[in-house]
Length: 156
Image 1 (cartoon, rainbow, N blue to C red):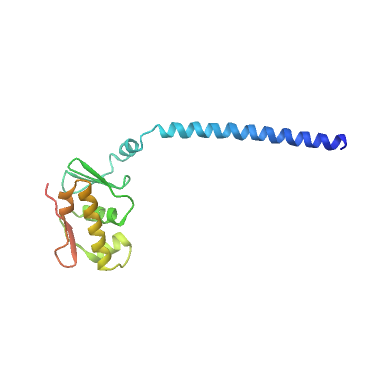
Image 2 (tube, rainbow, N blue to C red; image 1 turned 90 degrees about the vertical axis):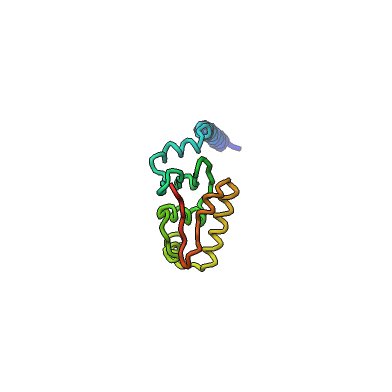
């Protein structure tokens, strides 16, 4: 090999080593930032940032927290996630103690038509999840006994 070719190889390898060192430094900085972020308690962070925004029904005991995708009632909390169950309860909570038509629920929760079966199934899943979280009283407050309507019956 001639000396020019060897010099090109040496320079290329040096640049490669320098770029690898820069990449390692960049990754270490990113790792440090991620570690600092994980030291934050996400639940506490979201509570702090949404403390003024929980939806409160007509009762002082109910809190639907859209940012946390959860509901709290009488000191107990149930995480529902980004689900039809959460959106259904959220909509009913906005109209506590008022009857809401199936069609309004279809429009609000599913953004269009769905079957009565889908609505009943979602209510069933919602009640089950609430009961499992110790919120049986809230689960029982979801009433669908009036034909074509649902209501969240809560007393203050």
